[in-house]
Length: 445
Image (tube, rainbow, N blue to C red; front, side):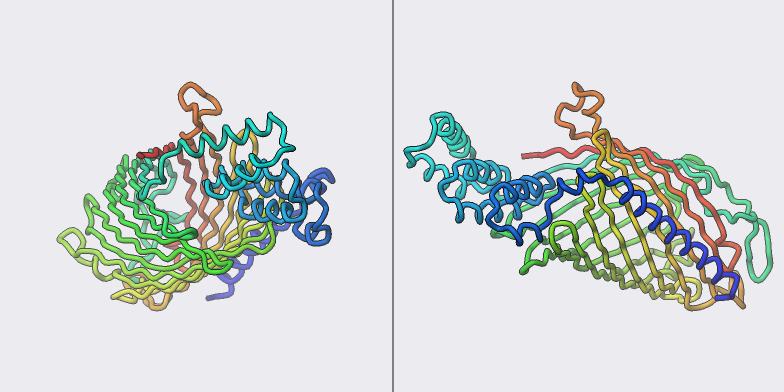
């Protein structure tokens, strides 16, 4: 890369670092002592394992954020220390009911019923829970659900027109006069089947269909069909998810494309606040050559990808995600298609009572292997993109309870800005996009 381009990369990376440290400073400066006191760490539990009040607060804290395994293990340990404490048993029963562990809950209920020092009120409560558990039908072998979503996107640069409205072609500079403003509407339907395998594993099969229509042009007029197989399981403290994805896209005025991808993702927790994730994927994509696209097969490619991530929970309100990625794509025709990509991303998530807010910033560096002589015979393409986005998600039921009493319909508003800097002026562009999405998940059995 030339010195000018290196300076652009340095400037973008510096901007990202400034955003990271500025936001972290705001978070720490706005954290009050009350929030620090409220969050009990695992280290405090190790230091005071017999402190009943501290351990109960820790169990409640973990249950509030959905970490039920930690809640159950804490309560079971407390029961070993305080076997006659009825409050601990009642709390543990309520958690076991939430996590669909009826056998453990019923065993605890039988223990409570045999005791003579139980108040009538507590006895009535556990009998009511017992009747509810016994009234439940046997768990289904398969569970089925449907996911429906509708969306609309408006962009001010749908064709990535360069900032100068110029482009290179066969070593000459010509006009870049393609239309910029456009809108797209899309809808998708997904059908999912899941089945438990043992205590710690589950199989998922998903069949999806997406249709997209563009307003001015037709590059984004297509139908996509997808089939996904995934297994979620635990090995030690590692959560692992191998998967296989098959996909077919039918474009209105372009070659149909086919792809398959397989890989594995995993994560593990360190304490109650840190989660580390990793993944590998292999993808093979092909397109049919036809009269409207005689060069479709040139970009047929195989790609390998690696990802690493870290999620951190500051408190009940704020969490962060940092991601690193690397991918290498090798195409049939290497010129202008073979590319290595390096990714760095940062995201802040805010769980406000009134809505969920997510803000992200990512930098991608793309290094191409062979020059595309149809554009420039002397320059091998190299570019960097900076993508900033902000998303706001709200349940319809929070505003219109009569329409969505179970708060199962979600509306998402988002804004995205992409700034691309390259050593070939064709790829120097800025794009702003606004989108609106509505989604609903329906349990079918």
